[in-house]
Structures are given as structure tokens and as C-alpha cells.
Image (tube, rainbow, N blue to C red):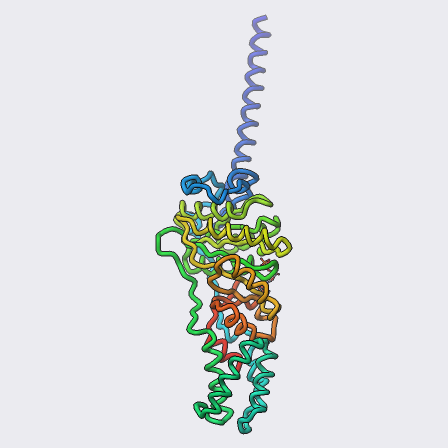
Amino acid sequence: MLALIIVLAVLAFLVLVSVGFLIGTSSRRALRREQPPERGFTVAPPRPSTSSTATIPDDAPRDALVEAPELEIPDLERLLEAPAPPVERPALRDRLGRARALLGGYLEGIRGRGVDESSFEELEEALLLADVGVATTTRILDDLRERVRSGTIDRTPAALLAALRADLEAVFDGDGPELRRGTGGGPTVWLFVGVNGVGKTTTIGKLAAREAAEGHSVVLAAGDTFRAAAGEQLETWAERSSAGIIRGAEGADPSSVIFDAVQHAAARKADLVLADTAGRLHTKVNLMEELRKVRRIAERPPGELTEVLLVLDATTGQNGLVQAKQFTEAVEVTGVVLTKLDGTAKGGVVLAIRSDLGLPIKLVGVGEAVEDLVEFDPKEFVAALFE
Ligand SMILES: Nc1nc2c(ncn2[C@@H]2O[C@H](COP(=O)(O)OP(=O)(O)O)[C@@H](O)[C@H]2O)c(=O)[nH]1
Ligand SMILES: [Mg+2]
């Protein structure tokens, strides 16, 4: 009997030990799965509920908003240590593609003859073909005609073209491409707006890579919660540039995603939040309301909203301007990013945008790759149109 009890006790002991061993191994395996990858970044998974899905009422007290929510976030300290890959800054002139020497070609006929009314007609045709737009073209040519008549410009093609070039440069009125940064110690926020498909997410991705390569710590806010694919697209860019990313669930309130991203950036002392937004036009009224709210939330401390960038697609030419005006009415836009300039011969639209909207062009997109983002330099741009 005693022997039987001993045998049973030994068996029970063995069973307990092996069960314990199995549990230990599987939980170690599970733990290993949860370890972040060895690369220098991690990506926060979309959070199904918590604060990103919660709607932040406009009149919410500051205190309620500033209370940092529990975030599943990448480890920015580690991120900062991970060297971001270098990103080349190409010269605008070399990347203009078909828009390069646009006017130079059209204006050949003017050189080598005297200046008369037909010179102005040719100039007009050249500017309109380049998509400079009727208003800007008329304004510039009326001014040139007057100056030729009054003798301030010599009646030579060289003098006329030099004056035209100066007038085109003057459209930009000393704009600089620098994107402003905050001075208050909190993270700088740059918000991107514009219709669907113009290149907002791509521009944010390129810019994140560039900023990270230059030593800034970047957090991306996936504020386009309308389509799940938009968040995934941004995540891919975040991985490439070692940036952090905050996503919300599909359909989440974009302002709460941006709020979370700013909180996260502030807690980690990150320099910059790049905030993406949805661009659907069919719900125009709601979208514009939503954008106003996003802007209000992005403005709140500890974040410092210093740029609201309207992204426009150069290939839509003058049509893009109508949409652009709706955005500028809804949110106070501070500058323009003109994408897909590589895909159009109508580079003159840059001039139309600048003079019609009265907004500085900050950046130009000249392709889909990470290095295809160029700072806009008016002098270089105008020179490239002629040469
Ligand atoms: N050729 C070219 N394609 C671009 C440029 N910028 C963006 N794209 C492409 O335009 C498409 C829409 O871009 P996306 O960033 O998703 O637009 P969003 O809807 O405004 O976020 C994508 O296929 C991009 O690769 C650019 O400067 N040049
Ligand atoms: Mg997008």
C-alpha cells in the first residue's frame, strides 16, 4: 500500500514538473514574440479603443486633454540612437523634368527681332501654355508693355526677357522654403491638408526621412482614419525613416489621433509631429469642419503648430486652385507643397498658385521616392524655366 502511495506521489510530481516546464517554455516564446525587432524602430499597432476612438469635444477643458493617455508607443529614446539613413537633397533645377526650359523653348521666336506688339502676343501664348494662368499673365504683360512704352525697358528682346524674368521672380516676393519650427520647447507640429491622392502621405513620408536623417526625432500622426490603407501606407514610411507613428482605429476621430501624437512626442521630447489628414471631398462640409477641429487640437500646448501645408497636385493645373481655395477658407494655410511636378510640362502653374492664393510654395515633389522632395527656390525655378 505504502509502495503504491509512493509510486503515485512520484508520478504526480513528474506530471506537475513537466506541465510547469511546458508553461514556462510557451510563455518564454510568447515573450520573445513581443520583443521589438532589432531594427531601430517599432511601430505602434492601431489601437482599437481607448482615447483614439474617443471623440474629444471642442469645448473639453485643457486639463482633460492634457492628461496623457496610455499609449502603445515606439521607444523614441532608442529611435534617437538609431542612425537614420541619409537622404539626398537634389537641386530643383535638375529635377524639374519636362517643366525645365519650358519658356526658353517657346520664347526662341522673340529673340533676334525687334520688340513690337507681336512679341507680347508670343509672350502671352508662352505663359498661358505653361499654365501661368490668365490673371497672372495679363498682369505681368500689362506691366511689361507699360515699361517698354515709357522707356524703362529697352526695346530689345534681351532686355524684355530679362524684365520678364525679374517679374516672374517678383511673384514669389522673397518667399523662403524654410518650414518654421516652434520655440516654446514643445514638439513642433506640421499639419498636411489637401484633397485625396495629391500626395499628402507620400510627402510626409519623404519629409520624415529627411528630418530624421538630419537628426530630428519625428512622430507621424496617422490622421487619415478614413481608410485603413492610409495608416498602413504611413507605417511603411515610418519604418523607412525610423520615425514613431501613432495610429487610430479606422473611423476614429482624427483630432484625437493628432492629440495622442503630440502628447506622445512631448512625453518623449521628440522635435516634430507630422500630421496626416484625410482628403475626401465628397463629404466636403464635414471634412472642412473636421479639419478646423484638427487644427484647433494641433494648436494646443504642449504642441506648437507652426505650419499648415496645403498639398496640391501640379498635374491638375488650374483646376487644383478651386479646391485649394476651399481649404484655405476652412483652415489657415501657411504654405503649399506642390507634388508631381515631374509629371507635367505645365510648371507655370507654380506661378498661378503663388499669385492666386498668395501662399508661399515651400516644397516641390518630383517623384515617388524618398529623395524626390525638393525645397522650392523661386530664383532657381524661374531660371530653370528659361534655360
Ligand atoms: N510622380 C509623382 N508621384 C507622386 C508624387 N507625390 C506623390 N505621388 C504619388 O501619388 C499617389 C498618391 O499619393 P498619396 O501620398 O497617397 O496621396 P494622399 O491621398 O494625398 O495622401 C501615390 O501613388 C504617390 O506615390 C510626386 O511628387 N511625383
Ligand atoms: Mg493619404
